Image 1 (tube, rainbow, N blue to C red):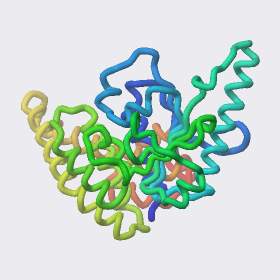
Image 2: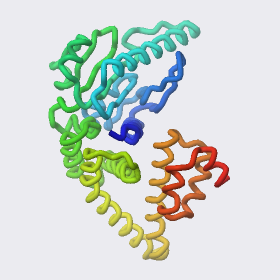
Image 3: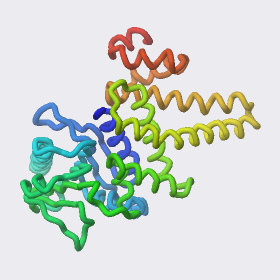
Image 4: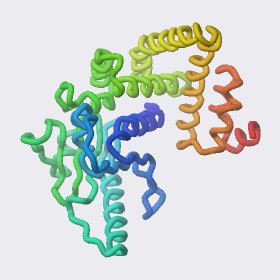
Length: 310
């Protein structure tokens, strides 16, 4: 399984959907050692209608949170590691509050949400999880109150409108059904547009990755018709704009935007967050064809890219 493209997709996806609701930080460093939290989220004071539209994901976003998505089922070791990061954040918050002479209530501490496609009975029993079916959907498994942690087994969630935005992060048939439901939403739905754009970026990344398996290929095939439709829309939009500003210029803008998206996605998969130096490199790479820039981005190190284009 090509893990890292999915990791980047999950972080970008959660960031895009949660940004209207609060401050979102991806790959946040944990002070205790060199570790990262995939997504750290702090809600804005005012509530927004987006929380309701995001369903269960919006419900997770009502309080500060660490969100750790997994492409494959989270293991015992990985779950423990996530909990350790949560405790490190607790300690950081407590130290800061002590320095500011403030008192932090238990309810003000962030909650950890571990998003895993599946969770075995052995895992759930081992961590003594329990359901809260009066308030939460089946599939949301809570650890003890003071641990402030829940394991969300995505494939156990009911197939409802409320769970759609989390099921997009599933895999196999669960993810493909969620993509079907996503496609059926109105085309002017902003969340739909964001999710589809990120899924198509994932498709592009998987296509240039040499280590793809059958599951990756199935996802690429499922996304291909959406990609073709999107490309046609981009070209059509370019043509319509070109009526006023020149047809060729309009088409070129659409192609250039798609090319920029591919370059940025490849750089993020290999190097993480894009800094100012990478932004300059991107402008140089846009002058190349996909056949020219793809091998460079896959083979050259950061230093070699900087030396070549700066």
